[in-house]
Image 1 (cartoon, one colour):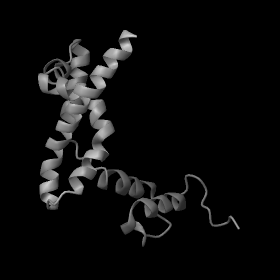
Image 2 (tube, rainbow, N blue to C red; image 1 turned 135 degrees about the vertical axis):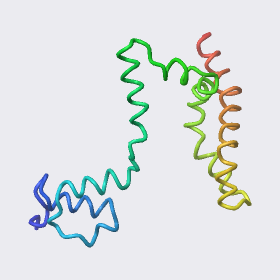
Image 3 (cartoon, rainbow, N blue to C red; image 1 turned 90 degrees about the vertical axis):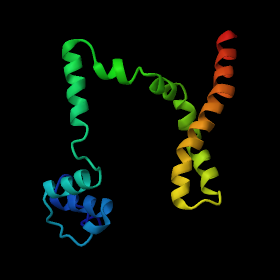
Length: 141
């Protein structure tokens, strides 16, 4: 009954994972190499093209120097601080905002243009008039 289940870590198991994750991989044989599956799953579908390497170099240099330039000049900038203040409301309301925009009479391209502004607006209003007053009330108890 269970003879079809491949051994953990075997090439057959990796091929099975590849077929589950990648539909175009379904016609490959069970003798896939681990490197092939790893490449297809991570490199092809994770879109990692080395774009984070300069940022990581800055983080490492900042840690070595004792002062991180990204944290000091980028993440502490007013726009980033604003996004940080409304981040919880953004997280909680992202699906609600998308459903609201998606049910509008806009074309798909217009929806993608309208969503960021609508989402930031809804998150700001929720943060300013719901989250902040509740936190102040709760801390004052």
